[in-house]
Amino acid sequence: QVQFVESGGGLVQPGGSLRLSCAASGFTFSSYAMSWYRQAPGKERELVARVSTGGYTNYADSVKGRFTISRDNAKNTVYLQMNSLKPDDTALYYCNAVIWSIAYWGQGTQVTVSS
Image 1 (spheres, rainbow, N blue to C red):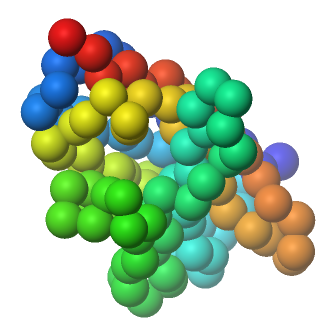
Image 2: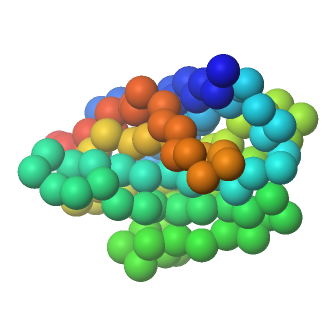
């Protein structure tokens, strides 16, 4: 079955950095686009970044220039490098893929940006 295991979240001060990882299994990883979403308390889940099978990327305006999504098909893993973190980046971050029109989600990893 499709599974995602996210890791790398934590507490960081404003201006700091974190690198999230999402290890995928149960499907042909290289054949699908991968995305990171986030959801802050009281807010809707939003797309943060997406990487296509060919490595093309797109980002939410709020994270452009600060976050970088990448994928390693040999390791079945997608990453989210987050720099210059702000308190508004505080959220539960989820890994996502849409496979045969079904959206699959990981359990999420918490990112808290606070001094």
